[in-house]
Image (cartoon, rainbow, N blue to C red; front, side):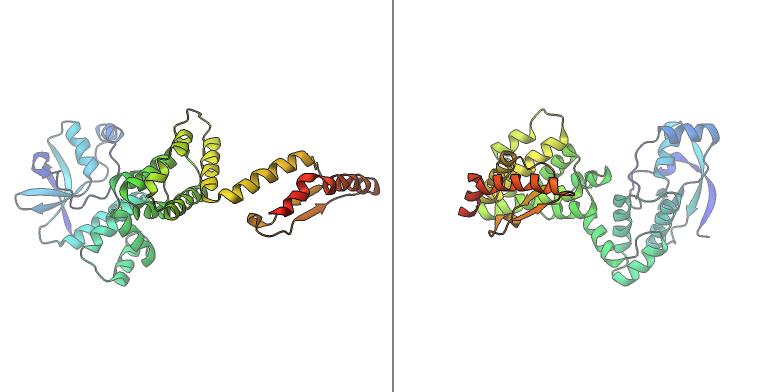
Length: 318
C-alpha cells in the first residue's frame, strides 16, 4: 500500500493546492452533518509536499471537518516519493469507485492523466482500469471538453448540453457558443432541436456573410426569445419557424400556402395529400382509404372537389 494512516493537524493541510482535484461537487453541509454524527467513514488521502500536506482525495471531507471546527483528523498519507502519476491514479480510482463520475470529472481525470501519458493507446488502457471510458475517441472528446469555457462546462454539468453539442458550441466564437447555451437552457429542448437551431443559424450566417451572433441578435428572433410566454415548446417552435423562414424563404412560403390549402379542402379522415419533399418537383401523392362502397363514393365527391379547387390547380404553377 502507498500510504500510512496518521493523525493529522488540519492546519498542516494546504487545501488550496488543487493539483489532484477532480470532484465538481461543492455542497458540504450534509457531509458535515454525517461526520459530526458518525465521524469520517472514508479517510482523506494526503501527500507530503515540503513541510505541508496536499490533498489527493477528500477535498470536501477536509472542508467539512474545518467547518465543524475539528483540529485533528485521521488521514491516509502518501510519502513525497510517490509519483504524481500514481497519486493521480489513486485520486481517480477513489472518486470513481465511490460513485459514477460526471462528464466534467471525467474530463478533469483524463486531463490529469494526459500530463504524464502521451500515448493514446496507453492512456485508454489506464483510463479503463480506473473506471473511466477506455475508448480513444471518447478520451479525445473529454480532453476537448476540459478545454471548454467554464460557462459551457457548467451547462454540461447541469445536463443542458450533451457532450456532442457542447463540443460543437466550443468550436464557435465564445460569445456565440454561450448565447446558444443560454438559449437551450431556457428552452429545455431536445438534442435534435438544438442541432437544428444551430445548423440553421450557421447556414444563415454563412449565406449572409454575417456572424452567428448577429443572426441570434436579429430583432425578429430576439422578440421571440425575450417573449414572456412561459410555454417553452411554443417558443421553440416559433424560433425554429423563424430560422426556417430566414434560411429557406421560398420553401417556407410554399409550405404556408400548402397548409392554407389543406384547410380550405377540408379533406377529413381517409384522404391525405402529400407534397413533394421541400416542394422541389411537381409530383404530389394522394392517398385514399375506404372500407365500403359508400365510403368510396363519399371519397369520390371529395376528390372531385379537390380537382376543381383553384388552389390545387395553382400548385403546379411554380
